[in-house]
Length: 488
Image (tube, rainbow, N blue to C red):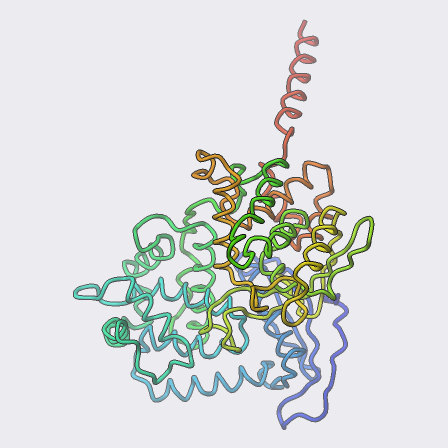
């Protein structure tokens, strides 16, 4: 890992066009010491130092990842005068040319269309979908309301229209009226400086279409999407400043801390994994084919998208003792319109890691045995993946959700079926992490195995560790007794 004082060596790759260079060195994110924008990212192009500052470390790391992808994934040259990847230089020139021909006040939908088109190639499918969702929520506040189509159709029309591949195409018939409203009755971007308009924008970030509060993670994701778009608006002179920077960060939902009610104990966990094997026993063994899939979530703490992408070459499954799963790829579900391949499942590296890194996860003998039995019965799917559907394709999220819902009906009593207990397949990962914490495994080691930071593990699971409250009460009682002895 590079440090700020010791930048990594650039990797020249042949000759670049005049004004561009492959000699690029990217430094780590550092602190500026300022309160307003405390994080700094710097890089060097052909000996010239460039940099930018950010309000959060997440934004700084996101920008660093974009530059890293341009350097190492796509092999782009960087502009010596601008310090930017060639694709960004071209996009900026196209934006400037379009802006020169546009009407005096750029309107919201057209701004979003250009903005998304400029970021499309550098973004993962999930990022594209999250960006569209956040901007679609804002769009509901950026159109005239009187006589407008319903919010559901406006949101769907925005998500359709923002995809670059749909530019110039006729919208679906059911979205045509909403799409025309978005493109003709939307406000100028400059209206975001109006306090009343921006108050409605903040409301749209925080609430769902039915008026109920959005989940905490949904609110954060929408706010991040809007913030980066507004930073771009400031950079392109559409806004004098980012109005979101001074806005109160209203908290909605919880989302940050795992709910203890979703956690299964050891008996419930085994009952659920057994019940999975009974699902669809008369219908292509739907459940038995996925029993080991849920097991890797429960015993190894994998994310569902990581389990979907697991290959045979990633598995070390000895005859006895512990084995290892070396994770290298995830297959998150994003929808065909968001992926470059046109498939529903994107193909990505590990979450929050560089694209070419892996994550070895030791697995206990019980999981080794389950995986060996699964491979013996079902073999591997296409691309030597451990899990697949009956046709050998990628396991879809709708498939493993349906099987899980049926398994809960078999394994849990009626009153628990209606409860949050193991309501989602992802809750098996929560149960695994909690079990390790209660076993006394150091947080740093758990974080390494599950691909989170120690801070995230501590924040999200601090209320799930058994015995801590009793231990704290005992210490307080002892202190009070000692104070009483001293007073006596």
